[in-house]
Image (tube, helix red, strand yellow):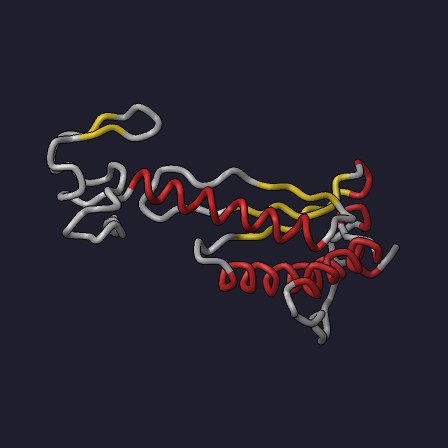
Length: 167
């Protein structure tokens, strides 16, 4: 029995060294180092790596994107998933999944797409009460009464200057 199995962490649930190297490559893309220190399990080390990568992605994007490592080598699903919530909206961006190995261009392109989608959702859902004095509808067909908050942002709004309202 391995040490991980003795601690209740069977080997099948722990990433293998190849997965650790691939997760480390994500840290490298973000300009971060592999965490050092004493980890009781390989899973704890990966968890520490994900925490660093997630924090870096969150801070590196305007929308506060998130990142999650995925790992199930037995079924060939190892990689990352990235996405973003949009504060004040009932939904977030689409999730983008990248399987290892992937290129730096694919990674940054996914984050760029998430930024664009989060910005679009914000612009469709954060209009202030003065954005549309006559009422309006968003791109999804939802109608908004005159002065109703939460519709699309009017880029020419004199009150919010096209920035919208924090809901």
